[in-house]
Structure formats: structure tokens, C-alpha cells
Length: 149
Image 1 (tube, rainbow, N blue to C red):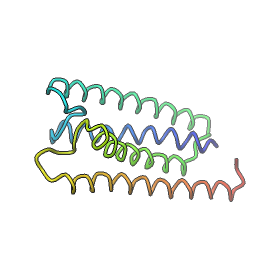
Image 2: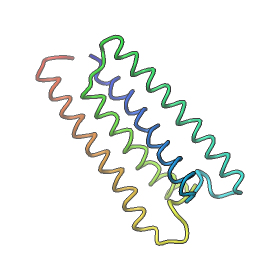
Image 3: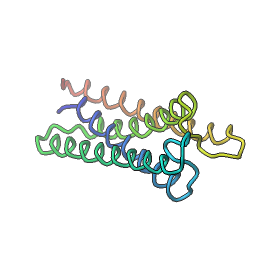
């Protein structure tokens, strides 16, 4: 069993999935923002395309890594579940704090009071991270009880 690699592979998948959800729902369907809104609409569209490319590459890499672990019978399902939630929450919180607030690449929405959106966005990220952390500790405890490395 490779618990660390199982966690990391699924964290990569989780981050890619959350990037895809963000890009599809908020960038394309709702059209609330682009990845980079501090320029022209054309530059925003290109930045969305680059984000989409990165998320697809991460998704493919994560699934190849996951499949290799599964094929080698080295996958730790409990660590994989934890990693997925850590990746989902990690991307969400990184986007909310770094992209939105620190770098100011874009906001969730424009022309509205941002506080409720920021609280929901970052709160969801924290909840996913907290759940993933709890699952990771449980998976580690379970592994330690079974006496596996």
C-alpha cells in the first residue's frame, strides 16, 4: 500500500475537478468572471482556456497515477478519499484567498456585496479541507492499527 501516493494522486484529481467546476459553472455558464479579469475580455477568455488546459492535464495525470496505483495493488482507498477532498478544498481555498484577494485576478461576482460570496466560497473550501483532514487522520490511524508502513 502506498498511502501517501494514494492521497497525492487523488488530491491532484480533486484540485482538477474543482478547477473544472469553477471554470464551467462560474466562467462559462454564469459568466460571473474569467480567470484573469484585469484586462480585456479576449485576454480573460484566453486565461480561461489556459486554466481549462491545466485542469485537463492535471486530471489526466491524476487518473494515470491513480490507475497505476490500482494496477500495482498499492492504492489505499481511505487515503484516496481523503486526498480527493483535500484537493477539492485546497483548490477552492487557494482560489478564494490567493486568486481573489491576494492577487486580485478576479472576484466571484461583480456589482454585488462580496462578503456573502466570499464567506460561502472560502467556507466551502474550509469545510472540504477539514473533512479531508479528518479522513486522512482516520486513514492513518486505521493503517497504524493494522501495522502497515
